[in-house]
Length: 123
Image (cartoon, rainbow, N blue to C red; front, top):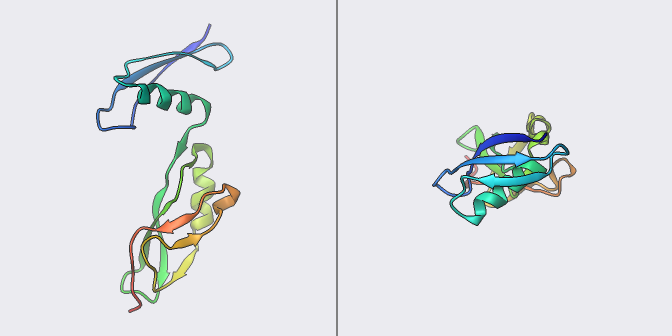
């Protein structure tokens, strides 16, 4: 016998309450509650390979502020978010930094860059 799981779709602001049914092997059998095809696609990805874009801050030296807002340029596996955050602990960026600058390439070997989401000038 398979399992039923509930998700809230985050693809659009509608926030559909999805019910996802999987078989004994964890393969998707059906999705209900979605108002559009994107909800079904979201459910499939949540079952097979859940991913998230990480938004956080890192330390910056030489700027008026002490923290620089950053995000991953793409989604990273949900199961590796803690590893990614630990890799950023202790990272110190030198000002100036422009919004969109790549802070770290290929973060944790995931093929995803870490980019600045704000510009901070040298103080």
